[in-house]
Image (cartoon, rainbow, N blue to C red; front, side):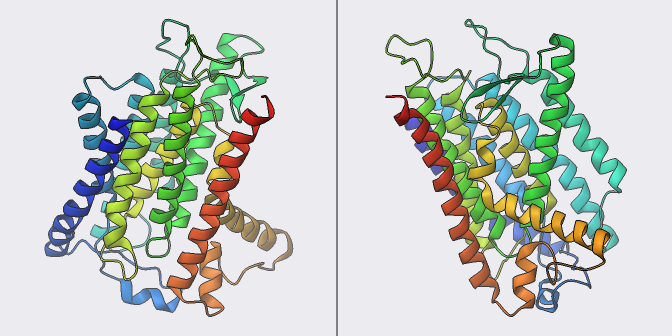
Length: 360
């Protein structure tokens, strides 16, 4: 528990103090955000705001996670190492994307095929490694069973280990791509994605702590214990990421002094996907991260409606831009969406706990 608190506190301080240093550096180099001309008119004043703030989030989270582990005399476990690999790897892809946008002064960065290739290499590597590194009880970080509150009876390895590995790579790649795009789409208003991420990772701190206390293999473990390889270290990492986002939000809240950019959104999306996979709560993440899902679905519905009927459901997608165009203020939208994010996390945590209570 001390390591969890330490990780959150260290990352918060690093992010809170490190972000203004990055802002000054990016401002001197004139590395500012390029704003799409077809977006809401109110966004045009944000042109030139420093971006790539995700660098600070990643740095603060990783350093705090390492320091908290070493300070308590432990080494990071493989489950959290894989999540960090996913976060840093996708953050690097986002960094390249942001860099091209800035240097070429356009809203599009990496070409789609190169972006997908970069994400694919990181995601496939994660998928392969997640099924390795079994502990003394035979548990690996990931599982070929599709998980909700824990592993379900749906086993991707039903047709054999080789097929299971391939299907798991496809499944994990889908989750990683979906969550990365979800955070990326949500990062359209000052502080919206950052605040929503805080709620999500805060919930996973609690999940990790609960799984530690009810982990299978201990003498006091109940029949409904959790078969998760390294829940304690996952709680530490979730706290570190939440703390980093807290510190960054001080500077990212409206009016934002810096944006996280694709560097941050892809990294946070990767961390979300990785946490759900290695904590065996893949489908539960859909409830806890409900706001991210709603925003993605608004874009999917908009595209589907336009292609099928030639009509748009919303004035503009993602959803938050629709509310901007009907006259809602940016701060009003962000706060109300944060409330929805909190309610979603509450529903998810309620489902998680209800399963446990119902078994007593």
